[in-house]
Amino acid sequence: MAGAMKVLAGNSNRPLTEAIAAYLGVPLTKCQVRRFADMEIFVEIQENVRGQDTFVIQSTSFPTNDNLMEALIMIDALRRASARRITAVMPYFGYARQDRKPGPRTPISAKLVANLITRAGADRVLTVDLHAGQIQGFFDIPTDNLFAAPVLVRDIQEKLDLSNIMVVSPDVGGVIRARALAKRINAPLAIVDKRRERPGDSEVMNIIGEVKGKSCILVDDIVDSGGTLCNAADALLEAGATDVRAYITHGVLSGGAVARITASGLKELVVTDTILPTKAVCVAENIRVISIAPLIGEAIARTAKEESVSSLWN
Image (cartoon, rainbow, N blue to C red; front, side):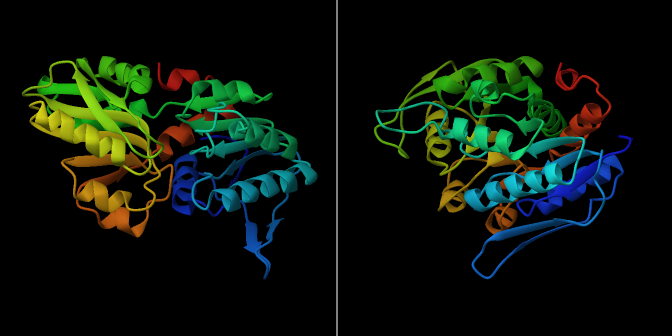
């Protein structure tokens, strides 16, 4: 399908990489990524990649720093092996929430990571649903930010009755994302207005929109602790929603998030597999994982053939 290319897998999400390679119809390039006794990372590419179009697939999810270093070292190994082009495929781009200075003497870590990837030798970056779109501008190399919306919309259309759906943004900052999905399924939009008293805590204040009698779908890019999502679900149910589901691209789900969501009023949380689901996620009754592999695979195929990637979601 995709012509001559080399696809390399980091350790962050091997099943996703294997699914992408299967979609492309290419074998994974033989590559050894291992640790020395002191946990230093060692990479050895065991096939000739000289003059090849190469794709390193690695999410920088937990353990974030280890996975980031793996990606950087793999990119460096490819550059020194004379690969023609190196694309860093990062389904989940860690540090994306640190895209600005929230206070004095704080870093902009997303820019630092962008610099590291570029300096390591990447020629382009491919990622999914960046937390902040402006991060594309942090890179001085071509960057494709895929939208998971087509994958989420397809699942919504297959699983739900669209006649009584209300799409809801869990905060004001996510309105553009929620509006785009609502437009795709021709559904109205509501917004949860919340006030965050301190990092990690959120207090729901008001629902903007009439959700009484509606089946609500919360839409966001990241679910981490799950607190905002659960509070939003409770507020929607109190406002008269018949049921509440959530469709989220990146299931970070740190700490006690899975237990919190399992015990919440959410009927279902649907996440993509940009981040490798933990055992707790896999056995949770109201959490379901859908695959993003066909979307990323098609984007890689189009990149290799120098075709438009943006047309994937037009």
